Length: 393
Image: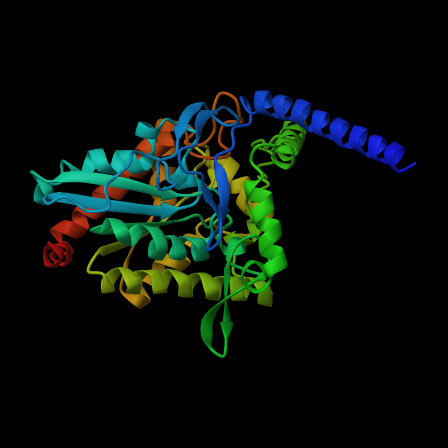
C-alpha cells in the first residue's frame, strides 16, 4: 500500500514538474511580446532587474537594456571624473521611457542640449536615467538616497507625474501596496504601509516580483490589459486613461486626497532640502497628461466642461506655488508642450500601435520635453545656481 501511494505521489510530482516545464517554455516564448524587466527591491518594493534586456512592443517599439546598477542606460562609474557634469533624472515610467529607444529619451536629450549651454562649454555632460515604472515620490526619494548619491550628481531633476503620483503616495488611495509609503505620525513623516510593517506581505511582494522564470501573473495581467484596452481604447470624445486619476484637475474634496497632496508636497520639499544639503542643483519638473497637451483646443474645452473646471493646470500650478514657498525652481511642462502641440498640430503622446494622444510620450514628446528642461537648467546655471557645483569639485 505504501509503495502504491509513493508511486502515485511520484507520478503526481512528475506530472506537475512536466506541466511547469512546458508552461515555462511557453511563457519564455511569450516573453518575446511581454518582456519583463523588473525585480523585487527590499527598500522600494521593486526596481529594474540589472542586466535584463529585450524588445518592448506593447507601446511603441524599443530595445531596452538595463545596466548593472538596475537602471536604463550605460554603466557609469560611481566615481565622477573631473570635468564632468552629471545630471540625475528621477521619476516613474515617463523617465524610464521604455517606449522609445534609449537615445531618444528626454534624459538623453537633456544631455545633448546642455552641451550648448555657454557656461558649460568644454564640460562633458552625463545625463543619468533613474526612472522606474510605477514609482511614486516616496520610492523616488529612497532611490535618491540609496542609488543616486553614489554617483555624485551635480544636478538632480525630479520628474513629477501628477496623473498618478498623488495616488501612488497615499496608503489609502493606492491599490498596489508593494511599495513604501510615508505618512504623518505625530506631525512627522514616517515610513509605513504593508511592505514596511508586515514580513508576510514583504514575502508576497518578493514572490510577486522575483518569480521571474515563470511569469504567469505578469503574462495574464498584460494579456488582460491588452484585451481591456483593445475593447475600449480612449478617444477624443472619451479621453479616459486607466492609469490617470481625474481628481487631480481640481482642488481635493475629501480627506484622502487632501492628505495625498500634503504628503506629496512634503516629499518633494524634503527631496529639495536633501539635494541642497549635498550642494547640488535641484529642479522639479511637472510632466503632462495627454489631454493637457491635446493639439485641438475644442477637445480640451469639452473635457474641461465635463470636469467642471476652467483649465487642466490646477496640479501644475499647485507644485509651482510649492516651489515659490519653499524656494526651489519648478518647470511646468504642460503649458509649454500644449503650445507646441497646438502650434504644430502634432500629438506628443501615442504611437502607431496605440491610440494617438494617449499614454506615454512619443519621440516628439521626449524631444520637446528634453529641450525645455535643458533650457530651464541652462537659465538656472546662468543665474548662478552652478556655484554649488563649484564647491563640490
